[in-house]
Image 1 (tube, helix red, strand yellow):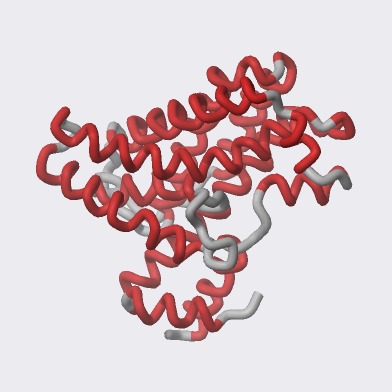
Image 2: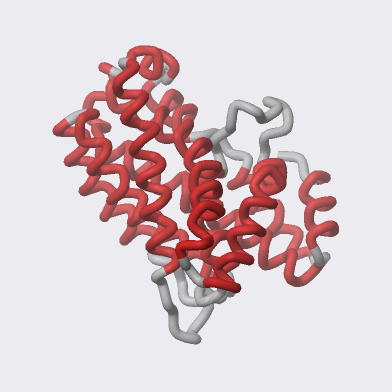
Length: 260
């Protein structure tokens, strides 16, 4: 691996293994986010579960319906997408948790647009169904499922946990498109990703109910939320670009050797 590509890999690992949204907000406001999570009523937690599944399904629909031209390597418009979610976050922050079912799918759709944009900037072909699913997979990074080992829940572990579901879904999309016969397989993938995405969404909503949040508000939280997944996307697609060049095993070996 060249020195330049090794630096790209180091940067990707720094992005992918960074603290989740809740930890970043806690550092910003000086209050453990767990207090906000504990304060969420059980009915709100049910709303979070429904909202995350609805949001990931919406993101999948956006990915499947995205057709791009042949032009690649365009610079991603990260700031533009952050400004968009700041607007939806402001609405959610003003109206409270009751708007989550409305606000989260909209914000997630904007995030998916940004993820697709980043994927294209790293040389991915957005017409490829497997690439579309790789974009959806980004929402699983930074959140753990109940079955994860706390010590081994990093980037490659998450990819490995989702590998079979992603592979089956990609086969369905290549063979049958988005046909009804493939719906159960796609639904399983959506559920697997939504389970992990739900962890980050819970932290996001909890941050919005912490009294000390003050001026940061829903807009600021949404910008952090977008920033997190833009970082996950950049790291993910840099690694995929390096894997195309050097192979999966070599990139994973080098990744594990890097200290951050």
